[in-house]
Amino acid sequence: MTFFEETILNQHLHTLEGWKLEGTTISKTYEANTFRRAVSFVTEIAMLAELADHHPDIDIRYNRVHIVLSTHSEGAITEKDITLAAAIDACFHKYRFSRMTRLEALLNFLATDPEDSFTRYGLALEYLSLNETEKGLALLKETIDRDPGYVAAYQQLGQQFHRFGQNEEAILYYKQGIEKARAIRNTHAASEMTNELEEILEELS
Picture 1 (spheres, helix red, strand yellow):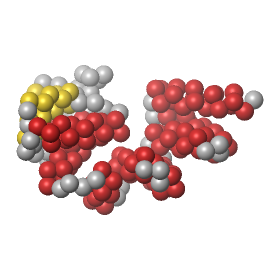
Picture 2 (cartoon, rainbow, N blue to C red; picture 1 turned 30 degrees about the horizontal axis):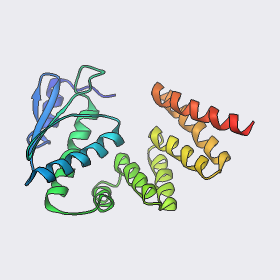
Picture 3 (cartoon, one colour; picture 1 turned 90 degrees about the vertical axis):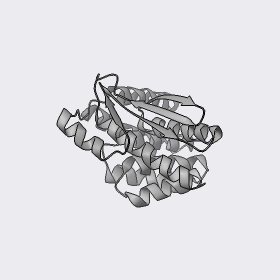
Picture 4 (spheres, rainbow, N blue to C red; picture 1 turned 60 degrees about the vertical axis):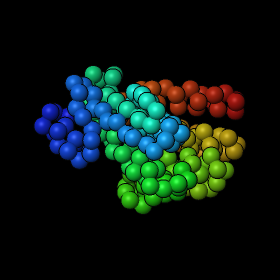
């Protein structure tokens, strides 16, 4: 995880419109047209936060949405905060000026930045939720081809192949994911995938 010294942090903040530095947090207030649209915007933020496994503090006051970001486990602002802040900004811009579906928004995000593993993974999950399994699996594989350290994609591939009874494929991706997670010291992901892999092996024994 990348920590930012004050000079570097300020440089990043200059690229983010309206975000303010407050101690070990960054914050911004967005204004939607109506209360309903503010709540819908928060729902979109929740999707981004779940995909990033990084959750902001959110406060809604009628049509105003106040977001506070900090990496609490580190007591500092990290790369995760800057990345999620940029994603929320992009989401608000798209949401404010369009009534696109979530799939359309993700496709547009990926077209803007084809190297963004976060968006590619989110698009894969969206296809899976729409039962477009072939497209979802293809994007998950593309995610790890382009970014071999994106461990969430290995876990999702393992879960999907196990779901369809393709256990050899599931085991392969779980083993690869555990190895990658351990290499980057992501003990939580490694533990989750180890438990899921052991359940499959127990089923097959």
